[in-house]
Amino acid sequence: MEPDGDPRAEEGTPLHIPDGFINAGTSLAAGVASAGGVGVCLKKTAVTMEEKQAPLAGLVAAFVFAAQMVNFPVALGTSGHLLGGVLATVLVGPWAGAICVTLVLLVQALFFADGGLSALGLNVLNMALIGGLGGYAVFRTVRAVLPKTRPMVVAASAIAAGVSVVLASIGFFVEYAIGGVGDVSLEAMFAAMVGVHALIGIGEAVITAVTVSAVLAVRPDLVYGARDLLPQLEIRHGQPVGRA
Amino acid sequence: MDRKNLTLFVVGGLIVALGLAFFVSPFASSSPDGLNKVAIDKGFSDTQKEHALDDGPLAGYAVKGVDDERVSTGIAGAVGVVVTFGLAMVLFALLRTLRSRRASEPSGP
Image (cartoon, rainbow over all chains, first blue to last red; front, side):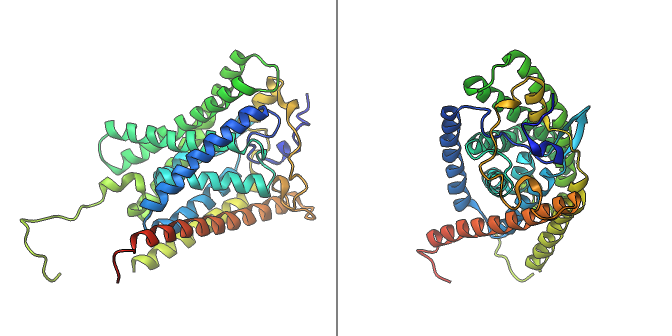
C-alpha cells in the first residue's frame, strides 16, 4: 500500500485537499460559498481595518505560511500541521484573519502545487471560513465565560484552535459525504478523520498559544482578541483635557 | 515611536517566519498528514489527480534544479514567506486605500 498517489507525501509538507477527492459539482458549490464568504471578509476589512493592522496582517499571513510547512508527528506514520485559522483571527480580527488564511491557501495552490485548483474553494471553506471564522466564534464564546485576563486570552485561543481543527475536518467529512469520489464507509471515515484531527488539534493549540502569548508579551495592543484588556482612556467629570 | 516599534516588530516576526521556513521546515515530519493518512487508510487516496501546476518551479515545496532536498525545501519555504508577505501587504494596502477614499470624502486635513 504505497501512497504513490501523492509524490509530495514524502517531503513533509502541508497537504490540502487535492483535485479528484470530491466531485466537480460539490467543489464548485464550495467555491461559490467561499467566494461569497471571502467577499464579505474583504468588505468588512476595508471598513474596519486600522493603519497599524495592515503590516501585522501581512506578517500573520507570512507566519502562517511558514508554520504550515513544519509538519509535526502526531501518531505512528502520521503528521499534522498548523491550519492557522484561530491564530490569524485572534491576532488581526476575524475578517482580516480569514483573508490571511485564504491568501496562504492561494499561494500554496498556485506556486507550490499544494491543494488542488478545483479544490481551492473546499480548502478555503474548511480552513479560512470554518476554521478561521468558526474558530474565532469559539474563541469569543470561551472568552466570555473566562476571567478577563491575558492568560485567559491565551487559554481561550488554545481551546478554540484545537476545536477549529476538528471543525475543519468535519467540514471535509461533510463535503466528502456529499460529493466524495471514492467508495468508502462514511462511518469509519468520520471516526478516523475526527480522531486524527483531534490529535493535530493539540499541536494547533500549542502553537497558537505560544504565538499569541509571545505577541501579548511584546505588543499586547496588537492582539485583536485581547483589545478589551487594554487600559481605557478615562473620562473624568467632563473636565477639559489640558496639558500633559 | 509607535510606528518604529511596529516596523521592528514586523521585521522581527518576518525573521522568525523565514527561520521556520528555511531552517526548520526541511526537518519537518515527512509522514502523510491527517487528511492524507485517512485517505490512504480508508482507500480513497487513489482518486487524487495530479496537480495542474505540478511542473511549476516551486511545486511540492522544492526548487527545481536544486538537488539537495533540504536546501531545496528551505529555499522554497523562504520564497513562499516573502511572496505571501508581499501579496498580503499589497492586498491590505489596497483595502485600506478603498477605505480612506470612502472616509476622506467629507473631511480634509
